[in-house]
Structures are given as C-alpha cells and as structure tokens.
Image 1 (cartoon, rainbow, N blue to C red):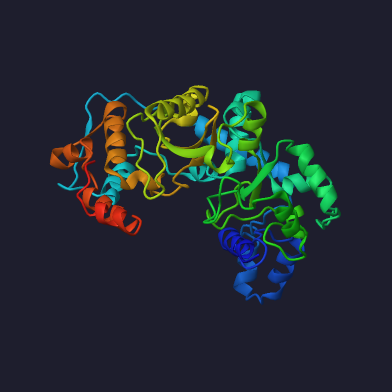
Image 2: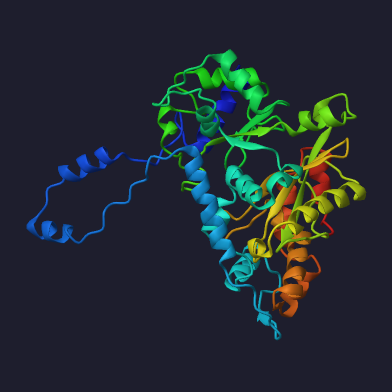
Length: 418
C-alpha cells in the first residue's frame, strides 16, 4: 500500500500536483467576469478598442487537440528549407578539454541541432505516435506500441458524461480497456518518465489503475479534462492535452505471438538507448549503462540499431533535418523489438540524452556532424572530442557518483578508458 501511495505522489509531482492535473483552459464567462471586474481609466478605455483580445484556450475534444497539433508539427517540419551543401567547413573552436556544456553551446550556436516548438511537442508520446501513424499508416504498429490518451479513451469509450464525470464502475472500465488493448496495457506519463516507472508502467496491475481512477480525487483524471486540454508541467505548454497515456503492453503482446524464453517476465526484456542524427543511427554511440549492470551482446546491439534505422528510413527526410533524437528500444528475449520512447531536447538548447555525459557519445556525434553538417571542430579540443576524450573529467566524476557502494565504487575511481 505504501509503495502504491509513493507512486501516486510521484505521478502527481510529475504531471502537476497536488491532486489531479493542472488545466490550462479558461471559460469565456470566467475571462469576461475577470475583465469586467478591473476598473478602467479613460485612457485605458480608449486603448481597449484597439487592444488585441486575450487569447483563450478553446474547449476542444481530445481528438481535435491532437489532430491540430499533428498537422501543425508536420507543416512546421516539412515546410523548412533543406540543408544547403557546404564546401568549406565552418571552423568551431573549443577549449582544450571541452566539457558537455561547451560542446552543446557550440552545437546550437552553429545550428546543427533543432531546438524548436516542434521538438518539444514530439517529446509527447501521443503526438509522436500520431505523427508516425500519419506518415506510415498501419506500418507504425511494427515499430511503436499503440498509444491512446487517457481522456481520449474515456470519452471515446463513453465512460464519462458530457460534464466529464465518470459514469462507469470498475467492471465496465476493465471491459473497455480489454476491448481497446486485448493483450493488456500500461499507463505512463504523456511526457517524460516517472521516477518509479517500470516496464509495467505506473501500475503493476490493471486493478490498481482502475482503483485509482475511481477515486473521487485522483492523480489521473478530473471531470474538467473532458473538454479542456491538460497542460504539461514538464514542457510548460499544452502538447497532446493528455497527462497520462495508455499504451499496448508490448511484453505481453510479444509473448502471445512468440513465447518469451525467461520464466520470469522481468528478465525477458531490457531497454537499450539508440542515438541518431538526421535519420542515421550512430552505430558507435552505444552507451555504457551507469549502474544497472545491463549488458548486451554485439548481435543484440546491431539488431536494435538496424530496427531503428529501418524505422527512420521510412520517414520523410524533411522530418529529420537537424533532428538529434535518441530512442529507448525494448529488447525482448524472443527476438522482438519495439521503440517505447523518443527522447528529444524538448525544444530547449539542452541535451537530448542523459548519455551525452559519456565521451564516446560526444565523440560519435562530433564525427557525424563533421561528416555531413559542414563543420570542423578545430584545434586540440576538436581532436579530443573526435577521439572520445571530451567531457572526460565530468564523466569520471559522474561514474563515481553513480556507482554502487562496495567494489563498484572502488573500481569507479580507476581512470576510465573512453
């Protein structure tokens, strides 16, 4: 019970505490009342005739919000001019021992990676899924788990009334979930990852999810979400309008097709981070996990990388220009693969993967930028980056901080070889 309570608290913090989720919409009546309550000076009365009206988020159905956002994302990315061929590489100067932040500043200053509204919106699981589905159609199911927003599901399954109040009991909700996800589902934050999240999502069992949903005050859904999109506290913006998404249980679904080998399901899958740039997998950018001890064979790494490369090859080049994305790929012991997360910079000039702290990842991106993006990281600093020595001391310090107590901690003090 205490564990479940901690999960609920963490989810609430992630999606906009205290109980329930923040909503960014205001009704027209509320806005008008607030506006009328403010006294106006004669000067303000004169100016108010020319002033632009206050922007108000309209009441919209879940499908409307998503469709409008997807159309805008595609219009934005596809409307950009293609990269121009550069015959004389631009020289990028860096310190002798460049750290991660200095490297990122140079990357964004030279416009090598896109940090825009579109990259922030694509970090929303529902929006990314719908963008891919719009481009690939039925083939999207080969690479991504089916994804549905919680408020979208409740409305489409007629589980809430016109005012957004839940009108179904637990049995009816479970039956609707089974119809939507025959192999089971997982509930996850629409943006980001909750600290306690596992391969089973936020709740280990369907019953726990339904029990939380049925509570009068819960962290998953509130009646006002029926008409008003939910603001993402991670992005500080409305993305899909969903705080929670429901996704196909990839592990159970794969097991129904080809039985998993491990008797314990928790040992039948692992996640591998794959780094990409402009539609190309960086084959030499496989990170070392910090403390989990998860290991992959060269064949498993190659299989996951080829899986992501196949996915990227199906997307239009215009969607991928200047995009630095990292993917979390679910590797199952029956040979199946699925992309379960896209990690972007969320529209900010920051890293698009926590593994950018590792010299080998910085080196792989540096070499790729120099190969195709018309830049040259000059001097000894550039040489350090190319040969996987960038951010060396920062990486060493993190390696010590994140090591397990005991022998691992002792070994972490040994200077690492990039």
